[in-house]
Length: 280
Ligand code: FPP
Image 1: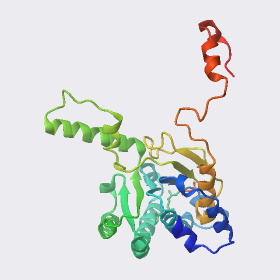
Image 2: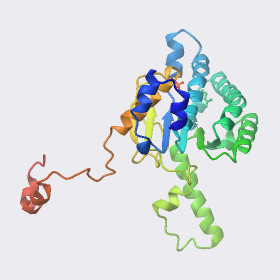
Image 3: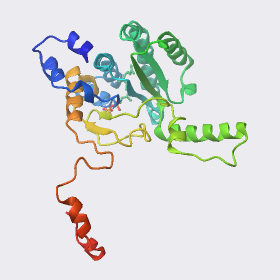
């Protein structure tokens, strides 16, 4: 948080939002579905790839701002398993952009102490993309400030399938398949995000009310924030506004924030047949 305030000019809009944030209640992990690149391009009569190209700078801004806020992790949905259905030239363009981003951003990742990880079925990516990812992951492996996960060839369902298969394989190797007892912790620790806190906040741009197979297990209790802003138009201000709104949500994790004064007594009065009554 201190780093962000240092990077801002006192009085400017982002500074004013940042100073209203509670540094003790920042999300530890933000996940983002970066959507709307195609619509951004269509609005301008550009080819779709121009929308993706315009989506690279917001990636840089969001990553740097999250690091300056002091978050533990950011996970960006860059390419889903379903995205292979797109035209070949669009997919090839996305790989070129990703390689361009990785090459250009390495100095920034180092300067901001960010460790890069890629999550998804990476073995199906073109070898040039795999090499570039491996190289940046190696170079940033010792960074301890923030973890940046790029979800590439990612699907929440295949992640769960991979986790279950890994659990079974380990049990087979250890010879304790018979006594295997799977808990939530077993599954969490075999996901691509093992060791990271689950996202507290899931942002989706461009207004669609969908999860699109993203981090299905991990977002169980995430706050959802959907904005109509298209990804290429997403700025630091939008990100800070999302965090501000997150801090104004009442996160109950299935519990209650505080009981109404009379609710303890009221529960004693509820007879079994009274449960038929519509409970307000
Ligand atoms: C969804 O928009 C976006 C993607 C499938 C790709 C996201 C890629 C980038 C933001 C660019 C580069 C990424 C990195 C990590 C450097 P869409 O094409 O589905 O948009 P639409 O719904 O408006 O058609």
